[in-house]
Structure formats: C-alpha cells, structure tokens
Image (cartoon, rainbow over all chains, first blue to last red; front, top):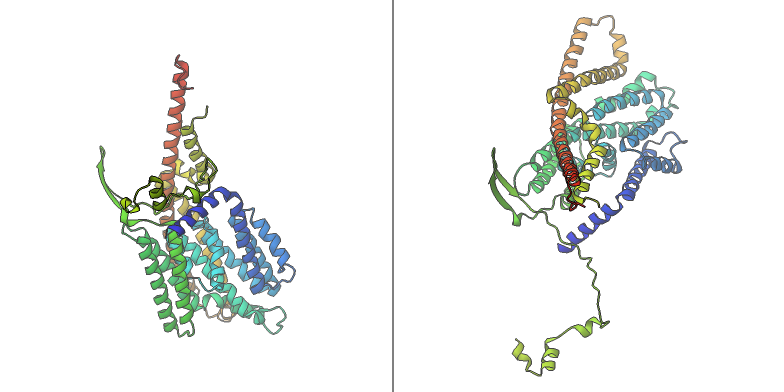
Length: 333
Length: 141
C-alpha cells in the first residue's frame, strides 16, 4: 500500500511540475481519439475522414478550450451527415442546437464529459461516466451525461441505418429519410432506458458521496454500480431486449474498478486517524470531524557520504562490534 | 525583499481572477434572487427556442401524416396540446435553471468571499508596511 501511495505522490508531483505540457498532450490524445472514432463510425465524407486531417484537428483542439473541441467535432459530424444526405444533415443540425441549448445553459464547464460519454459507449464502459460524474463533479453535470448519451444513440442509429439514409438510395423520399433518422431518437426505447438509468445513477452517487458518513465514496460507488446494473437489466427485460446482460455486468464491474481507482487518486482517506473536535466562537458551537488524507512523505532523499567509504564497510554487525570491543557476542542480546 | 505571505495571497487572488473571476463577477453585482431571475429570463428564451426546435423536429418527422390529416385536424385541440407540452417543458427547463443557478450562486459567493478575504489581508499588509516606512523604524526591511 505504501508503495502505491508513493507512486501516487510521485505522479501528483510530476503532474504539478509539468502541468503546462501534460494538459495539451492529454487534450490532443482525447481529440485524436474522438476524431478517429468519428471517422471510423460515421466517416461518410471521404475528404475530411482521413487520419492526417484528424491529426491536424486534434492539434488545433490541444490549444483551444474544450468547448472549442466540441464545436469542431460537431462541425465534422455535420459535414459527414451532409455527405450522407441533406435531410440527415438538417436533423443533425437541429439536434445539435437543442443539445447546445441544454449543455451550454446548464453544464458548460463539463465539455470533457460530453466528449468522453460517446467514447466510453464505444469502449463498452459507459457505466463509468455516471459514477465518475457523481464522484468528481457537481450534480448538474448530469446534463453533460444526458447530452453525451443522446448524441451517442443518435449517431449510432445513423451508422446502423446508413445504407437506408444514403444519398445513393433513390427510392427513399426526403420525408421518409427524416422519419427514419428521427426514429433513432423518438422511437429508441433503449435510449430512454439508458438515459433514465444514467441520470438516476449520477444523482444517487452525487448525493451519497456528499453524505457525512464514513466511506461515503465507497458506498456511493457500490450503490451507483448496483443501481446501474439492476436498473439496466430489469429495463432490458421489460423492453424485451436480449443479449445485453453480460455486457452490462462486465461493463459495470469495469466501472467499479475504475471508480475505486478514482477514489484512490482523489479521495484517499485514513479513517483510522479520524479526529472529532469541538470548539466555539461568539456565535456558534462547532462539531468538527476531521479525516486525514492517506499520504506518505516522498522518498527522494539524497544521501551524501563524506569519507568515501563503501556502504558495506560502514555496516556494523553485532559480530564485528563484539570483535572490535573484544567481548562475548551474547552479551549484546 | 519579497514578502512571501503577501505573495501567497496574491497568487490565490490571481488564480481566482484567471479561472473563476469572470464567472463569479455577477455574483458580486447581484443578490441571489436577481441572479437567479436573470438566468430564468435567459432560460425562458433558450427554453422556448429549444421547444420550438423540438416541435419542428416532430413536425418534420410526421410531415406525411400531418399533411394527410390537415383538413380534418382539430386545430384548437392541436394548439392546446402544443401549449400544454410547452408549459410542461418550460416548467422542467426553468426548474432545472432555478436549481442549477442557486447551486452556482452559493459556490460562487463562497469563492468571492475567499477572494475578498485575501484582498483584505493584502491591504492590511500594505498599510502596515506604509506605517512602518513612515516611521523611523527600519525593521520591516
């Protein structure tokens, strides 16, 4: 445990020293993964769905605020949808405006979460997001989770129906194309289920982790993961959607592991050293519970030797000491 | 010689200016009620736009059936249902605004309070230095 804490301290110090360089690199990687995923899944416009373009866009995103990344990614998606068909592009634009009106109004600081949500869906671990949000963010970050979820289901629906929505399909009329693409939102019961469960999980985790109880974070994680698992499995059974149980179980197990790692990084307390203090001032009595953080002091001590003797020579064993003193070794026990 | 304690307070002030200053500025200017009311007003506009877009999306989706039933449609009933859903949507949207901006105001005021505590301390330090400088005492150097 001490070794892990030491590693954590080292990582924290390293990040503190190099924050200026690490943040843009992380932002670049996130943007690059985002653009690659867009290209792989809905890269209908061949001109912009290329890795060099993704690299350049990711480089630009590493230098601008995260909301700039969202606007750029939206622009790429709209361009891809335009290549697929004009009707899909129109619906996507309208949907983006609606999502912007919700996201920028309520949770404009949580742009990373909107970007990470669809990525986590593709990696099959979306359950980590509501738990992570509840642990690390304010309650209103739930709007970012909701926007990311709607965005993923819409784009995934378009990807699955790309053949029917494509410009090359002459038989499809404009109105029916719009109906097909909008059905990905309005008729998608799975999306409503996942959205509802994610929102409830985020709020539950947030409320529990703020409670003044011991191991609040641990309890919040377990409650969140259980709620996610039970809610989704029961919902899928009610909706008659099969083949999702194993994915939900494995995804939630992974979410629990990641959430406990987050707890170790951001909220590692030593409850065995809890102190309860009581004091007063002119206006109030204070009953304070102080829980110390579990930290270890750094081990990067520099030992300077004077005299140039080797460490082995310096070590004074009981035997040598007895020889030098000319006494019996047993006397030293 | 650099006054380290004063520097520490000034760094905290600069951090606030850089990160939260712009966002917290309205919290200095407005009382909670006014701040939330202002955002409710903005939300009224954005919420109405949002609802109009959603209705537009729904109309696009059911354009065929809407055109087919246009002659037999009970316009009054249709408008009534649009109005009721609008009111429900706005109640949700404005309710969320009220909660979110109350929480933001509380957090922002806390930050502003800390900022002004730092300003006060730095001012006191400057005043003390001025007093010492004016006197014959050179210990402050």
